[in-house]
Figure: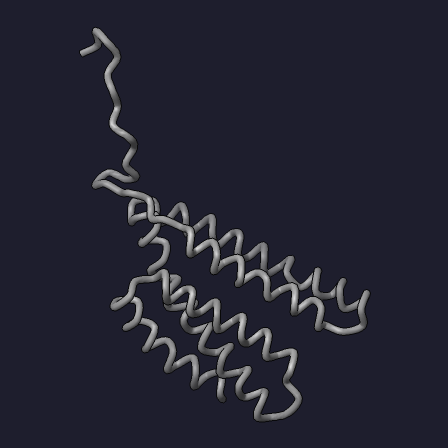
Length: 156
């Protein structure tokens, strides 16, 4: 219930925030919430702590889903949207399929999931740094804009 409630509220609020602030700070907010949720998971011992975890995870999930409809167009323009979203979806599906394997291996080696979850916390941290550094591609009416072509001497 806390996950669903936080997701519902966060989806609405994140749409407003994306319109107001743009996708970059909202994506960073989602990843920071995910980092906080994964860090908090290490401390969960009872129902109140589990509710805090589910609320943070639900908020992060809803914001991530809401922003996924905006982020690609913002950074790559609408011209190549199908290509970039298709490639991103392929990577996401591969990551979802392969993702549990390192966790399982670390659990077998250490006897618990704490190390694996701690290492998985690095992924949204890398996403925050990457988003902070990312710059949108300049896009013209016909697609990505190339630098102006300088004609060779003697050519029309």
